[in-house]
Figure 1: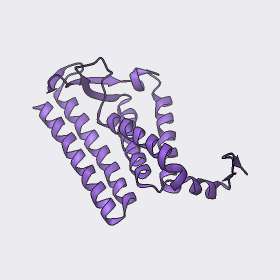
Figure 2: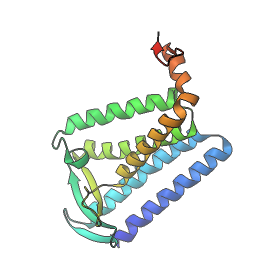
Figure 3: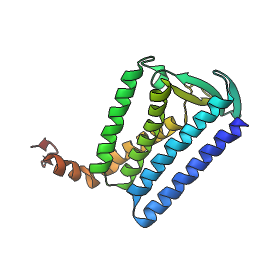
Figure 4: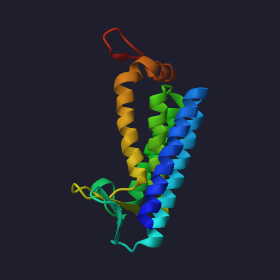
Length: 199
């Protein structure tokens, strides 16, 4: 049954991420294990989308978690809430630039574990949806909420959203203490006593 299959994929992905976090922290190799988690986000996201496409017709629904979520195959030609619908190459370009910018930050500036994990999970989700846009011209969405009226989304979207929320916490609470100096050293800037950046 497709609902059970998708649920199994998601639970497996959560387990893999939990294990990569555990071993990354235990061995002090957050960066390497975060990259592995990123790769698994892409793999599981693509498997889930393929399973839905092979099982459900466009617009068809199936049971997932009654009262919470149902499966519904949707093709999203735009961005969030179908904004910029039909602007395929613009969205590919913007997504590619965004992923490249985050990759630059996470490989050159960000050292705090929360920042590393959050940014790599955003990259994983971004790549998952970028593959759809390049290959199909649209993103396959399949998770529909039953308790509120909310746009249909997919596994990649979950990790982009959760990663962004975690990255916001990292930036507000840990960036200045942990990684601001990395940016300043790389770009030749420093903070004056009043907090303003100066050359």
